[in-house]
Image 1 (cartoon, rainbow over the protein chains, first blue to last red):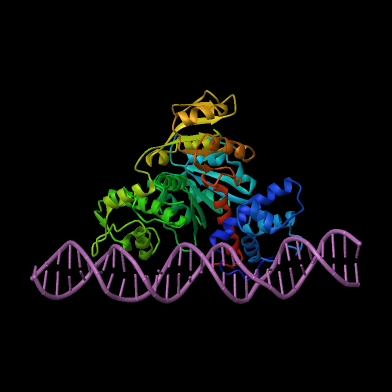
Image 2 (cartoon, rainbow over the protein chains, first blue to last red):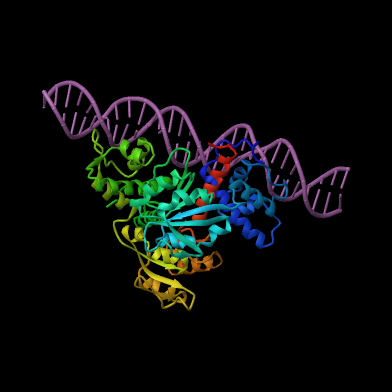
Length: 218
Length: 218
DNA sequence: TAGCGATTGTGAAACCATTCACAAATCAGG
DNA sequence: CCTGATTTGTGAATGGTTTCACAATCGCTA
């Protein structure tokens, strides 16, 4: 497979854009495109053609000079790179507003992220059914997470409980965490952590609006 | 106020980190800190002290040499900069899983983002009550959005409907949009757009895990 | 009030990401 | 099969962000 690739360090932005390219290609395929040039792809996603080509070139040569990239094949390549050509078993911890929305979030399943386990520490929630999955007691994590071969944990508990939950899932052998709590979690070096904070994006908009009002930035 | 500041272009990363500093300061205040050094703040958020100082220096000199930054005062400064020292009227369009989670999402209200209006085009949802707000018909946007002095729109409709909804809110005079749909929206140059895609962060984790499996990256 | 230890604020240096620019490769049409 | 138009892949140049390093400043103590 890809073991002989000389990937050293790919920037976060490049990985992020791969996801964007993938979504663009999904649309292009539906529209009946067989091939797409870096120019056209860039135009659609408000990027530069050079950026598209450079990003892809880190992983191989997928295009045909004079013609562009074959849409279906490139989708296949990107899903190989991102690892979304397979299923990942996911556990979700915390069935509040955000947690229960994520259980029903179709984009996850579409890319192969299958929520297998749901945990909470609230006795009223434990045992309840969410989209066919029974909520387990958080105390059962140590047993259930290894049993279900969970690779990724999504943490949607309040900030005050998040570090403890995080320590717990790491203890269970989980190496990848998506954290929705508004705090900076501490994890060992060999655990991957990504943070998602929806309020921060609103704050960014607020910053931009505020500067607009005063005519400072543009 | 701040009209005389010579802010030209602040990078997205800096703005993002301001939000992070703000959350760290919230915690520090609770823990009883009066002042905090860039060293300590950086340690908590896994950044470098120089980065903290540089970020803040774009906006002014808030610290005291030999001592650090006054926690309360710095919180005040950052909330001024980010514009979260006031209320913003927000409209939410699309009451699916994600949309209804956001209506109850406490982090928003905490930073001054108040959801005033909720829209949907589904007759079964229109008229229903979400946290005290009655869902309006999307056809009413043109009337209600200006009436309620809405500054920010959150789009949580399916990808297929998102561009149309986006055009609609722009038409109503909204200048800032937070888009949860997994597509690249087209907006005029004077409209601020931020995208939030929760699946993309999972894909990033998936990329990291996959490379870990093959022992390529570290 | 003088001296010490600590920490900021900030130019300059180092590093990283993006864009440029062009040779190499392919397609399409005759 | 040759020629012109197109587009990739990529080393080099550019532009931007982060880190370094240190003078300037402040609190504290005696």
